[in-house]
Length: 473
Image 1 (cartoon, rainbow, N blue to C red):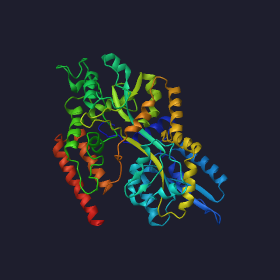
Image 2 (tube, helix red, strand yellow):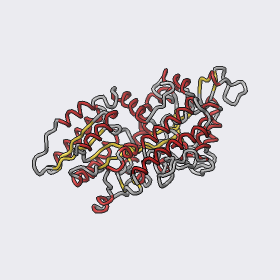
Image 3 (cartoon, helix red, strand yellow):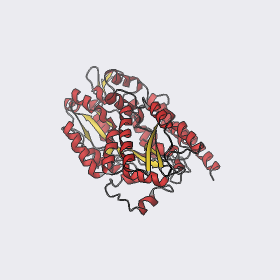
Image 4 (cartoon, rainbow, N blue to C red):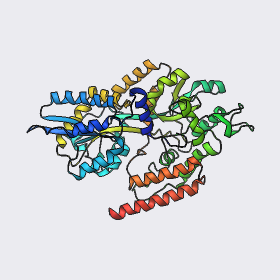
């Protein structure tokens, strides 16, 4: 995997491989065929089709859980029957688009993240009228999680379900060997900044001769241990937000690209320097060494600290067998004055063009009841957005890994990025692809002129945005 940028999908796939022995979408085609062969419901019965393929939920063991849920719901609701339509992740856009064009829209889709919502941006139901009409109780959801799937002009597109907050994982053994204090677990401590994180990382970055990155004798080409592993899943938009820029790289009115703003330039430059100036983050070629010994960078035992999401839970067992580790708070940028902990989140949404929206809301409410909610979150290996269930999640995790401070994950939810880094913007895919291309130029070292790269990115994105508004006046 040297030189490749790992996505959330990659890490979730690794988790499925580790726990179920199969790629996430491995059994999805069979499930799709099964759903396609389903017979129409009897007269007077409303069918609710749940489209799964936008993210997790397509592994064989996950499909089994869905099947059990179907039987329970259908047995208790004779007037409404649900079925899951599961498709491989790589085919979800084409499949869903085809169903839309054919007038066969599924009533619901999920689990689906913010990026998946953006892919069919105008196609989802605003749940606000249903929530208000039923006086639906939102008090048990973490406060800020309620904002993740709420959008200006679009309303509440999904109830909070799965959250994957970010924290800093750190290798206690490497910190101890370097004589460095562990990072703080409390969010918002004024001296816990990225500058401090990078300063510590220099002490934890070691070459083959035992020199750390502060030593004049340090040879970065011969590095054997790195103090920090950056953000393998993250890119320019997330970095810019942490440094105080617009989270999505566009103005609030969605008409102007701002990737070349001072905040973006400063943040992206700081991150580029960690690989090409201070060398505390392995470049793509060096990072291949991680996967020679483990399924992820941190698990190699060659990384001091790594800021990433809770979806790494699949690896906790192997980490514990290899070294002592814990989690800490996400640092802040001093000028911003507060930490921004990037979060991913999954939900279920309802399609605007589906035939049975009221039945879909009935099914959704049932799925979001605590008992089903808990099973779905366990099925997707995520942290539940319900406060009552999250407390049980912490105690369950600590029973398995008693030396890890899992409360840090919940505390992270008070500092999530707002709006979310994956939220919709005009020409979502084309702008996203341009961001990836620009990020890859910097990560590979092909072009290390940050101002030039971001100016080019902003100009390209602006062209796409202008096209969008010309077509959508």
